Image 1 (cartoon, rainbow, N blue to C red):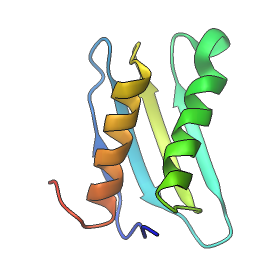
Image 2: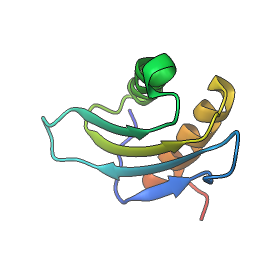
Image 3: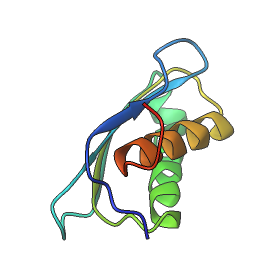
Length: 94
């Protein structure tokens, strides 16, 4: 199980990328995702579900995520999320 200890971010707001800002939340709050994307109607729920799935796979139950998506594919979203998780848990990155 991974524990978030500080806010962190990964990614950019360039085309075909996503900017993830991840912060720890109080115990019991759950995972809260705020998503901005030009494709909200088509892919908004899919992107939110993917973000939650990645967090849960890492054992994270309480987190606040702000995501600004600009046409990123699933593997890009996954890479950015995993990088933000590592940074927020103090396991690496900068």
